[in-house]
Image (cartoon, rainbow, N blue to C red; front, top):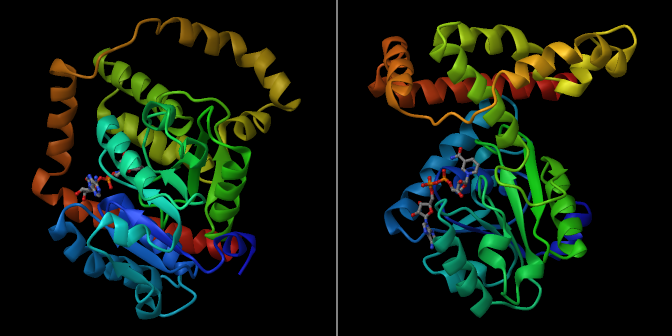
Length: 318
Ligand SMILES: NC(=O)c1ccc[n+]([C@@H]2O[C@H](COP(=O)([O-])OP(=O)(O)OC[C@H]3O[C@@H](n4cnc5c(N)ncnc54)[C@H](O)[C@@H]3O)[C@@H](O)[C@H]2O)c1
């Protein structure tokens, strides 16, 4: 297919952790033509995974986002009941287990014991730098963060975050692999908690909480501002591109005209604000008024349908 398949030399991709993200990764790798081996420490999760994955694939098929029948893609995915079994013959492991550093460390120690000297391990962690669970291991040069956005089968961005021990070859492999499966990879050059995506999201959410706390806007109006304002441009261009087009002289002109305003805004938020207390209760009450908790899962399905319609639009117009 392309260079990443050459690198894999006909080997499989192993996914460890068959929860929300692991199942999404299974779709991503299988639809790109890779044999996928799937494992979860919880046998019930593993047993339920193929049917849930098939449902995802059928949704993609309905939106013409698959090049082959969903059954063909699904047939590439095989559940395995042990860690040794799932990594046997796999050149790449996508770790997608719970977000707990000690569990990730323990898993890497077990993967080190099963190492074949070549296998590369990508971690789906949302924000833990790899050195916190790979340091001191002989496999550390072949460990890298490969952080997706949920669901990875619909949202293409992946953050590649090498630790100081990660080899340049591992980073190059991960870039090739992500390209081969149709994801958009960025490289986070230095280890930092939250990487890039969640750091950007953190700033927006910090201000969103504060605007509600200060009585400046309701949660509904904050959501509207992103949904019907900022988000329109952000769905196809980034913040630097946005401001580059918002002043006749480009980004430096924008910085000259509006930099002082943004600086005053930043200076007005000098302390960190814990997420908790009456503020979270207020937003929770507001959100539950719009959407009862028992309808949350249904709304997630609605979100995925919106994402599929958007992915179809992007595919047809890119
Ligand atoms: N949910 C998201 O939006 C999202 C997005 C990007 C990245 N992530 C990251 O992806 C990872 C997985 O998140 P998730 O949302 O899929 O969680 P999840 O709870 O849905 O799935 C985790 C799975 O890992 C299994 N597991 C735990 N320890 C294991 C082990 N030692 N070996 C094999 N399986 C094991 C659990 O049984 C569970 O099924 C986390 O690191 C998370 O931070 C999550």
